Length: 435
Image 1 (spheres, helix red, strand yellow):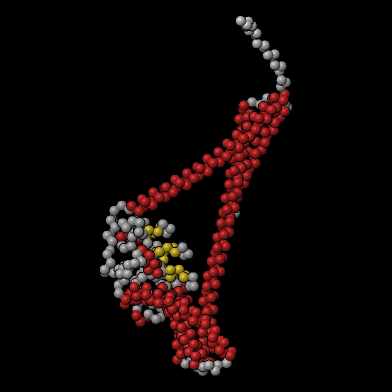
Image 2 (image 1 turned 120 degrees about the horizontal axis):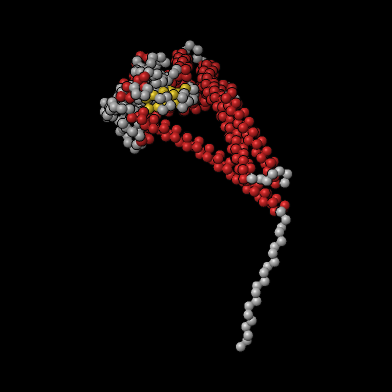
C-alpha cells in the first residue's frame, strides 16, 4: 500500500468516527429531551441533528468508497502480477516445446533412422540433415531475440514532425490525415502497427508468433522465415526417409519398427502443419505482402482477384527486399533492404495526394478529444458526488422523520387529553300540524 493511500484512508476513517460520535451525541440529547430529562427540543436541535446525520452518512459512504477503491487497486495489482507470471510461464512453455521437438527429431534421425538404414554419421544425407538442423536452431534463436524494429525517438516522428508528409499510408477514416499512434504519441511509418504484447509499434509488422515469443517484424522476419523453411525441410526429410525405409525393409525388428513408426507419425504430423505455413509465407514474400496486409486486402474485397498491391515491385525485388542480398538468402544473417520506415512502391499503384503543409489539424482533433474526455470524467465525478449527497440527504430525512414521529408520540403521551365540550343539541324546529 502506498503511504499517501494509507494516510488518506486514516483521514477518512477519523472523519467518519468524529461525525458518527457527533451524531450519536445529538441523538442522545434528543432522546433525553423526548423523555423529559432535558429541555424542550427546538427546531435548531433538529436542524443540527439533521446536519450531523447527513455528514456522518456522507463520510461513511466516502469511507466505503475509499476502502473499495483501495481493495480494487490491490486486486488489479495482484492480477497484473499474476498475468505477468502467466505470460512468462506460457512463453517458457512454447520455447521448451520447440526445443524438445527439435531434439526429438534429431535423436530420431541419429539414433533410429541412421542405424536402421546402415548409414554413417558423416554420410551425405546425415550431413545435409545436420546442416538443416543447425540453420534451423540459429534462425530460431535470432527470431526469438532480435528486435523487430521500432519507431525512432527523433522529433521527425513526433507531433508536428516532417514524417507525416513522407508516409504514403493514410487513416481509413480520414484519407487526408497521416496515421497517428495515440499510445506512443508518434506518427506511424508505412506498414507499422501497434503490438499489444510489446506495448509499442513494430516496423513492417507481420504477426505475433508465440512459438518464438516475439513479434515478427522488419528485422526478424528473415530469421523467422528461415526457421520455418529449415524446420519444414527437416521434418519432411525425416518423414519421407523413414516411410521409404519401412516400405522397402519389411524384415526389421519389432523394436526398431516401433520407433520408426512413431518417428514417421510425429514427423508427418509436423510436416503437414509446417508445409502449408511455409508455402503461405513464400506466397507473401513473392507478392511483397505481410500477413496483416494479406488479411486486410482480402477482407476489404474478397471477390476481387486482381488487386494491385501497394508494395508489389516484382518477384525478384520482393524477395530481395525481405531476404536481402541473394548470396545470403539461405543464411540467417544479412539484414533486409531498407530501414523499415519507407518502402519502394508499386508503379501501378495510385499514390494519395500529399498532405497540405498547413496547420496541424490532428493536434486540434486530439486536443478536442482529450478535452471532451476530461469533461466527461469531471461530469462522472460530479455525478458520484451528487449521488452521495442524495443518499446522505435521504438518510438524514429518514432519521428526522423518525425523530419527529417519536417526538409526537412522546408529546401525546405526556399531555392529558382535555375534556371535550358537550355537543350542542340541535334546536327543535316548529312542529308541523297535519292538515
